[in-house]
Amino acid sequence: MSVVHPGMTYLPATKEIRDLLGDLLDKGVDVRPGPPFAITDRNPASVAVYVDDSLLIRAVICFDLALSAYAGAALALVPATLAEQAVEERNLPAQITETLHEVLNIAAALFNADGAPHMKLHAVHPVGTPMPPDIRARSQVLGRRIDLWVDVAGYGTGRLAVVLT
View 1 (cartoon, rainbow, N blue to C red):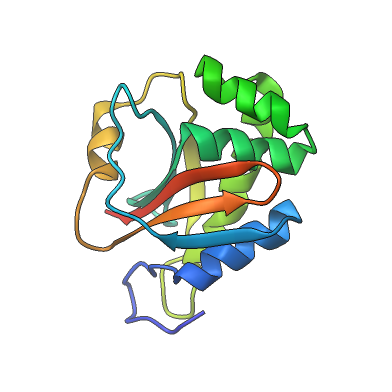
View 2 (cartoon, rainbow, N blue to C red; view 1 turned 45 degrees about the vertical axis):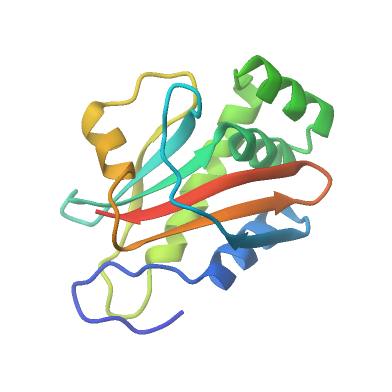
């Protein structure tokens, strides 16, 4: 990880995201840049909210429905067919939601660079659950963000956005 200006939230590099997901899921993970990912009713997402030690919201990570299903299923060692079914039905089973929460909890490490504020997971709003309007708005901020297509080997491709707020 790189050193950042003191007090600034660290925006992880593409390679750091790929490495974290690949190591965590124990699968090949390929990433490539994508256009800004916008959450809509037709394009739902799971959103993780990250805070510093004073509970100030500093970042969100968004996984679209597909990546939510594939990442959660891969960590749980659930067959890809169940993840594909979740995407088709637009509903994440409890087992996938639980492991998705763990993926997003571990992802807090992406922000913890030298000189940056310590970050931790504060909340996860999985696909299909109500999301506070301010959290949805934070996910749409342009500027310090990274948007990626993420392919989880054996499962499929989805979208990810890391947004600093």
